[in-house]
Length: 110
Image (cartoon, rainbow, N blue to C red; front, side, top):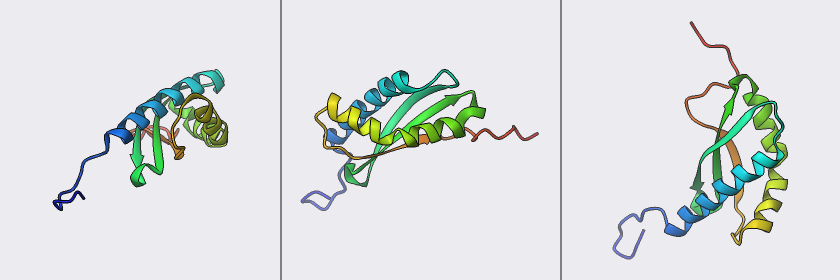
């Protein structure tokens, strides 16, 4: 809240940081991911006052989503090192999530 008691919107600095992290995540994933699936960064979102960033991804084919998300989880530390080398950001915790609306490799329901 600001000094008038009104709720403030997202800080511009947080917006810039999420843009940088989304771009760097896309570059990192392109370089590190294997040919088994296509992982696309769709957006990033700051939560917990910028202490945590959610990086949303789309995965094709969807049947590979669990494997791809497990890969991203294992690569979290390597991605943090990549951010240290390629940005001047205060490093938040980064979590990778499947974009809303997609199923985790489950067959479609009829």
